Length: 559
Ligand SMILES: Cc1cc2nc3c(=O)[nH]c(=O)nc-3n(C[C@H](O)[C@H](O)[C@H](O)COP(=O)(O)OP(=O)(O)OC[C@H]3O[C@@H](n4cnc5c(N)ncnc54)[C@H](O)[C@@H]3O)c2cc1C
Image (cartoon, rainbow, N blue to C red):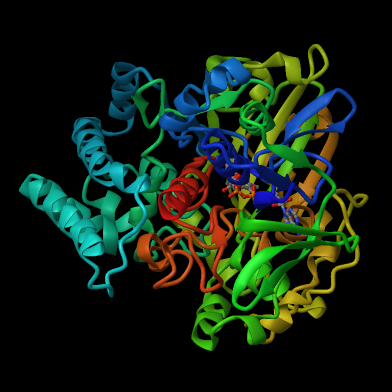
């Protein structure tokens, strides 16, 4: 029987879209390139006995509607709380914010009494801002150029919500849209380490610095999560982030979805301006009424199609302009024991939350300065977690996993002449890289994108050296390490230029401009071809909203 819909990609968004379509009675087939489901929300046993969240490592943004509609707890989803953020400082001091508000207030007061007071006000203001933006997550963005009354109604809805905000919050909202994370935080706080750690959420997944205008808004994106109704709380999925994808896949299968792994799509078949199915890399042709692509626009339009023949030229122009500019890497360590931080020695609860290497605003900005000129940061910003303290089941008894998200690691490195020598053996998957997609897109002038194969181990060493400045025992306790550069994220996970969100999460690429202006409503210029991944509104993170919004839009559209 012919499929009603084929979904390209078995990441969590593709699976969510498939589940919603199948629950509405459609026959759906999901095709995943890798041997394992989940995309960037994946758990893999990369070292014997260590089940690692290879890419994404914490969850907060997953929409409660999806958890409810798909009954994910029944399909095995369990979220365990992540308590707080610990920032060690080179001075031997630290900042440790926890979910207990009174404790955090006392801790901040140790650094500045004024900041402790401002922290309450800031928290309230951000919750208000998040409340304003939240309903937008579940909506198909309006097309501001359209005179269709339905589109105008959506714009009116937004205008009314904005007007309903108290005056102060209206100004805050405008500031969030225009200011840098640090400028915004400067208005509230004076403690350098507090501002540095808080500003970090403004730059994750972007090629911008904490002082770049527009990064304040990204702070809000990371503030919108909730777990069990608690705003801005983050957690671990028991079994790693792959467990989230597996729970969604189980719900999808229960609704009748067929899921195939090791089934890479090579082409989207287009006949007379309509998508009619896909061709797999092995040459198999599969037909369907609809094709949904959960991969990024580069793969969807420039790789899987003959863009110049099958797409309007102005659309192709916009798609080529869409910015990826991966700026992060990931280092996953299997440990024999826990890291011992000089500023707070021992195995305390400070190790159970996020550990942030963000000791000061200048430190963060200097990390960006190096990346701007084509080098990875010699002292990077890092967000680390030790999930084994909360979920020991993912490692052998007594052993631990240290997951290090690292920024900045620009996809475009300077040429080989300036390459650093590397120490240590190679790690991480490495296959020949053609950089072919760069022929389709603009690349950084004068930069050679292939140097990461030479730099992988030097990058890994930098990460370890940086940790060792705060926890000197780290080198003695490493059993295995996996170093993922932006190039590895591109090769292994299909993330163009290694952007963790399938395209930069910067203001000009959000809402009605994601992925490109005029095409933010999940449909594409090719009839029956839809987008449903992180490159669509509301963007990246383990959220599921793009997949759900796209499916609901399709169901409304085809009803
Ligand atoms: C290193 C890293 C750390 C992150 N940390 C966090 C975090 O802690 N918390 C958080 O909320 N978010 C985090 N993110 C972001 C988040 O993981 C992603 O935004 C999200 O998982 C993307 O989901 P998706 O389904 O839209 O796309 P993807 O996960 O990119 O899924 C697309 C799928 O398509 C498949 N595919 C590619 N090409 C083909 C083909 N030719 N044929 C068939 N299938 C194909 C891919 O293999 C993949 O499975 C992180 C991402 C990375 C990379």
